Image (cartoon, rainbow, N blue to C red):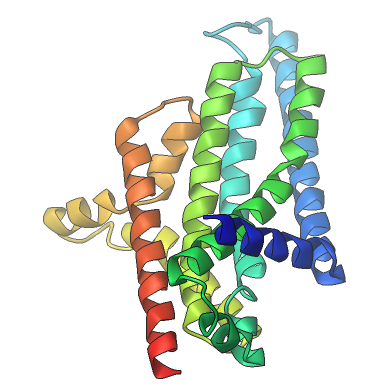
Length: 259
């Protein structure tokens, strides 16, 4: 595990020391800021409209910042991660394979599990840097509104689980390629298929809808944004992440075997 954290710190250092890494982080923060501002204006306009009509209510049964701002913010950021996570993971293994460093690493006394976990922890810390802008967002909301913090933290936890699942997909794809661009494009395609695919058979037979619906990612994530902590959803995300990391480990072992 110590070697895994050494690799993770190396990954984060590579992210924050490169202009490309800061470009990804800055773009994500900018997009998140635009989303927050647009939702705050929407919340303000809705409040004014209801006040003018005499129908304004506050509290659990009325207008609430979680429903108008926090929930759509987290959900929209979840879909935005489909575009940004491939940018965080595309170089993790693909660049190592292209430069020959992966074969060099595998020739050292480094276990494949430590290498995969190190890359995963590194991408996890990169994801945390992207989402750190939410600390500022929540501080602003706390200063001007009264959010339901319990539901907010559940939604944030769901966003982290979704991002970690996307990271695991990106890492596995990156092991299979030697080009950063190829890894990024394939990861994006895999994530789009994972997100959109289960809903593509909406007009099909009931049994196929049921099977595909059980693999649907966004409906499970949406429950988190509503403040619903479903342990079944947590187990689903955790299980899929472990399966993807196991697949990445097997792929690394195959690269080691091929030399």
